[in-house]
Length: 301
Image 1 (cartoon, rainbow, N blue to C red):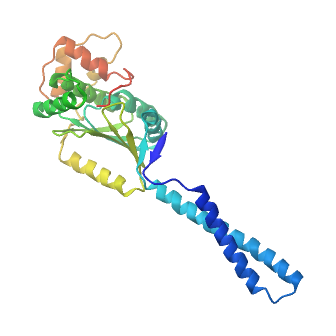
Image 2 (image 1 turned 90 degrees about the horizontal axis):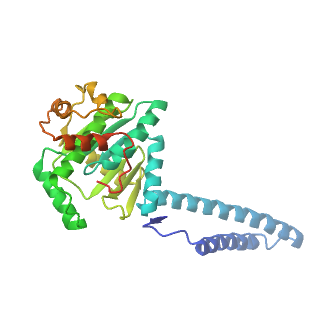
């Protein structure tokens, strides 16, 4: 179910407006033809009333059109049960996708696989993703402290967040190598409480709490362009990863039943300028969460 900040069309008010216009033009027609014969007057009045009704109908259509255009400029509130449906609608026809959020769990688990399939059937889809920089310990710590304070999620440690971020990066590398998607990923040292999924003509704004409402902003809303501009400004001030040196060996990590090699994973990240050491268990977790269709995230991060 969707709610809107603006009022709904009042049917009684619309009927009243139609009635007033019809009465006005009817009375005007009657006075204009008052000196004619009874038969001619009645025929003229009938014709004029029909014409007046048409005019009133035309005016009401103009009113409804303007009201519809006004509705499109409102920010819609989405119930939680509608969010997935609206995200799916956004993905259907877009040629680009921009995401800004925390760790991008839903982006790697749902959006990238879906857009990859779509890109096989039409032209290349360009994707830009902004997530927290996993090498920025301060930013990771601040984010985890926020989740612990705001949502009581004390199990969100900086290391747990880092592993999720590395999964998202690895997932982006996989799809950049194995699909028609053109993916750019940006690492930022700040975070927002909102998540932005931006398609060609719609923006879905969510929070990491799956029980929170979301917001839908359409393209003809001035706020749409402000968000897009802010997204690009943030990208310019973030660290962009270079995927030009992605090796074929990355695909081997995603083969079912393949052995996890910590050295291989570390070298893959090293090619991006990220120096990191992983335990065997951490490697398993990173690759598992990065795999296509691992699971749909229940918590938006």
